[in-house]
Image (cartoon, rainbow, N blue to C red; front, side, top):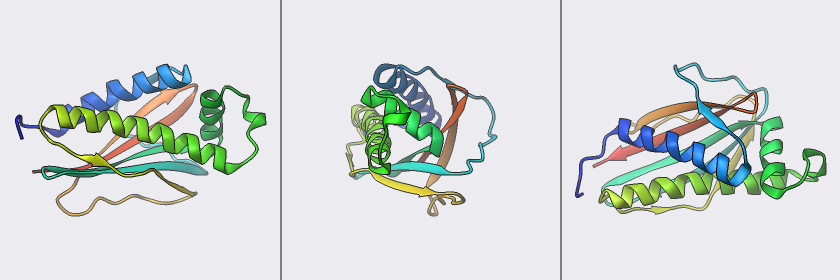
Length: 160
């Protein structure tokens, strides 16, 4: 690696990048919520994209409440939430949003000398689940407020 990458740098980048993606792609303003209080979602849609390289591995998870995921899908598709006809439309948009967020992280990591590639998006749906980090993997959760809703970006990363 050309430079030393630290978790605070990753979190700082991801904060700026998520705000940019939500503003540019969805015309939604997202603001980082200070503190570590994670929201509780009755129903949740999570996008997941992994990344791996010689000096870095990990995954990014984008957690949205089920109702908000429908709003996000409608915003990206340029339709109203009532026009969403299937979970597949929501899954595609949440997967694509997660892919954009992780793709930005991949580019940033590559620019710092930590070459890596990303996986295809996967979707997790449910009411009560936890993503647990493997040993030696750092985990950070960033909570954002957006349209009176909460967004959680969970980053699992192993450097070195």
